Image (cartoon, rainbow, N blue to C red; front, side, top):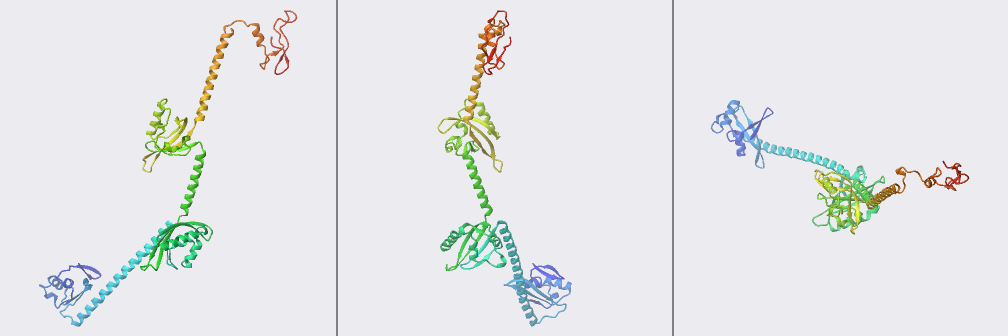
Length: 450
């Protein structure tokens, strides 16, 4: 399809041989028609248009770029007046120059678009590096060739001062890391291999920063010259997080090792996948891959308890303070108290349980001893009641024996009096039964109640 410009409008023109423009395009040569209106058989469409629009002599020259038509220059006259050969040659020369000009414009626009795309790409790259804290750089044997905007920020260099020298960069590396980092770079350069390393740098304000460097060596064809292209990634926050995690793990390990409790994890099949070192008072490795009831000693004596345990696990519910009898590594019995909660992954799939366990053997033994003593006290109290009911007649309504009354005369604090005399003794049988007594504890004399 060919487009014709009419009054600032592009009108499509069929690229066929029935018009002058189409013939010039198809034949890739200049077409000169002295009177187009009279060429009904040769140019039926073009002749019809000529009669309608009122033009006669027509000259068309194609614009060819490497033999391919990219346009046509069309000149018309309203009268029959053919063009001279010199005019035709001039038009063809102008067409050639127009092709060159059009090609230059096209190349310029393409270059402008590429430059704009490159500018946007560099802007995106700079923003991505800023967000990821990544700087890029390039060196040759002696000179810094390139340093990204984020690289200046990471190392604390001023972009207005120009590219930092390699020596200035090495001065920023932490003194404790400088020698071995430099030696690693030399070894990689000598072996012409890539390398990656983590090290610290010291910024002008005295703060330290952890960087992860990755470099690639690019050698010339003869191997004599090389360039190093690489990245620096700020991993300070990651290193701090790793340090905090190590400290937390150390604290956790210390607590776990010094505490009587232990930590455990089981998988979806309820078998142990993790046990801390103090679990069950023995080497926990022997229990990995087994379930807690594989070592329980009360499965037969307390079946209802274990039925509830299994139902709780199948329902994926947490549990607390489950006490059961188990066996240590040496086979001796022990009491274990366990608590746990179910674990699910990000998709909600059940992954098992995790929780704590504790050796409560001493506590359970103390509770059993306390219960035994309490039962013994109850039995002794019952025996004393039976003895009192069978040895005296008080509960049956009989009169007190004199000896009983003598035995019952005590001071208010519960101790018997010293030097008491039985009733009826002394001067005269009719004298009042009063005598002087003395408490063992207070050593004071009191008159007993009659």
